[in-house]
Amino acid sequence: MKRKQKQTQKKSAERGSLLWILVVAALVLALAGAYGIQSGSAGKAAQPTPKETPFDGDRAFEDLKTIVGFGPRPSGSEAIGRTRAYIIDELKKAGLAPALDEFEARTPRGPVKMANIRASRAGSSSTIIAVTGHYDTKRFDSIRFEGASDGGSSAAWLLEFVRATSGMKLNNTLEFIFFDGEEAVVEWTADDSVYGSRFDLDRRYRAGGLRNLKALILVDMIGDRNLNIKQESGSTSWLTSTIWNSAHAMGYNREFLTDSIAIEDDHVPFLKAGIPAVDLIDFDYPYWHTAGDTLDKTSARSLKVVGDVLYAALPEIDKRASP
Image 1 (cartoon, rainbow, N blue to C red):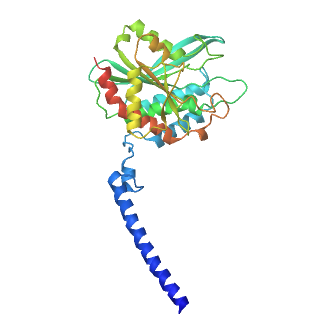
Image 2: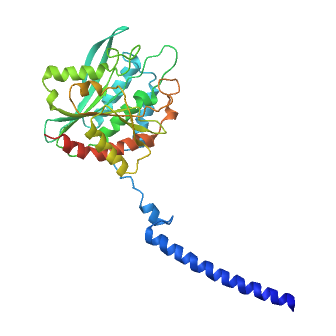
Image 3: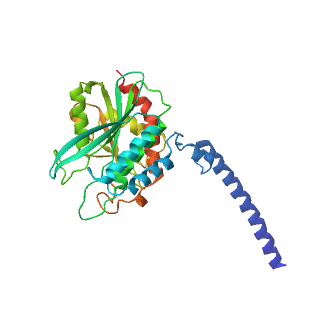
């Protein structure tokens, strides 16, 4: 009898404890629902959702595969000639009429033939927003440098951005420029670097059309699988803030960081000429200027992230850049 009485008391206590736990659990769930802190749908709804855009990361990655397949592409090489022909063909397929700006650059290794590729899509005015990137690779004698991210990613990304913006109606004319000669032929100096962008600036000066260029957007090394783009400190602040606001509104905080870094790149000649310009570059890339800068270090997703962000930011840039 004694033993049975103890068992009855234990069951009664268990029932009381269980009832109390259920009451407390109900209160916790109610409070969590009121303040949106539970891990269910309310928590997920609070996260920004990337906006769907026409930019196709997989298609851009196919372009990147093709470009990398041509091999190392230093200025003046046979491989960059094949790359140039491919870019021109793809621009024609997109309904544009590409133009070649050919020039001979004076380099520490003597004269080198180079060529920028340009194509435009008319806006409602003749003023211009230039979207740019380089397609050459650094020349190395000691390693095979494929330049998947450094040179390949910007060219592939720019081709897809041409396609993605085909239906976009803007006030400014969009000018797409593939720069040759971004890389130093020997070692980076003011004279041995950014040959293509310096030539383009001079071309505009000679034609008297520099004042029509209202903004320049540069992408470089944006193929890194682990994408980390810091704010380039010399870039024009309103362009930087417009792009980063779009990135963070789309939930790309991890890819578009608020840290800053100073980079010399194809945008610098335009900044010096008073043109608003911004450089989007992942300079934390561990394979920069090494034999490891190969296709497997890049991703379609990274290309799409940058494409989504600039596609979303472009209407506001167009508005800010309009006269």
